[in-house]
Length: 451
Image 1 (cartoon, rainbow, N blue to C red):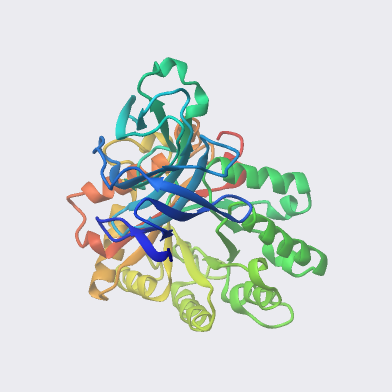
Image 2 (image 1 turned 45 degrees about the vertical axis):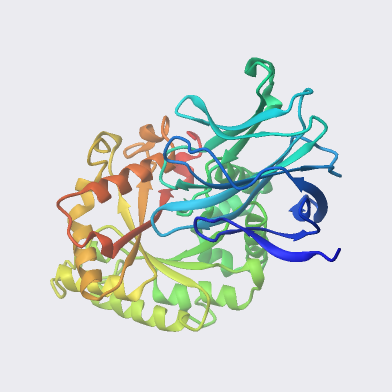
């Protein structure tokens, strides 16, 4: 019988789960990823699309259970997470896959998830005791939960759960659809030592960091040897879980200048390829504390830089964002409203510093009272321009700031508290014109000893 190629889809939102070939009413061929490459596995379908609801915030969208002979040599193994889809309302959809071989001769099983201190039933199924099962679960969950993982398990209902052993439990580490970033100071020192590079990437992996912004680049780019090392490090980072690499600069010239002594991030990208390049250029110049000359520059110069950098990068795939600590021009040449308008219309993202001590980071405000006035200027400006402005919150991990908080709380938890406080705020208007897209930690040297 000739097979028919179809898509197995979730009935709630048409999310494609797998492509598979139906050979008959009883047998399908599924393409299941098993490293290295893919392997064909034949199953007989034993259950239709049905599932039990579980405790909020996990929303089980669909589950399929297939049973049959299997060529895998590792039964009862989690095949991994696929099809992670980020939604606009701070949620994502994920799929978790299992291969399960019954422990004993029994035909009644349950898939469970551990939530709120209890194992909750997700799906009950039954079948021949000689069957190996492939289970594919599709679920939706909030990305703002201060939780790092969920656990799933499959149990034989005739065996006491105390006898199952840890090999029945599969842990799903929740990925974040939001930016999880780290400023890397003293990077010139880190680049010179392989051990330091590995320590940085291990720290990032252990703490869910997926974006790195690098300091000390001008000297590195200005030397051919260290410039080559930087290219290699960017590739290494991308091969070890880092999704985006950012190059920090303090001026227009160091960002996009093309003179022989600019040593700019754009020059570096032009001389590099693929994962050697920076994905993002970040401008740091504290115009709000301009004192009359030198660095930092006055806002009239700064906003010209924004226009020129944005215009140049429009012909590239490189993003551009800025760090700010106030919406203010000390020369009084621009009103706060005008400063806000220039910011929201000329950059891809605004990195806003919430540099407060642990004592100020308490419920219910969670530090929002330190920055709500500035956020109001930005949200008003975005609303007037009919745009939505992306905001990244920067936490300072130094001893005088939130170092002690992070000794017992995760970065993600701090971020979730701020976002939830903003969403619950009754004083800020035009809130929908600001979209929180992630957090950054300043900086690696300040927090590497505590997490």
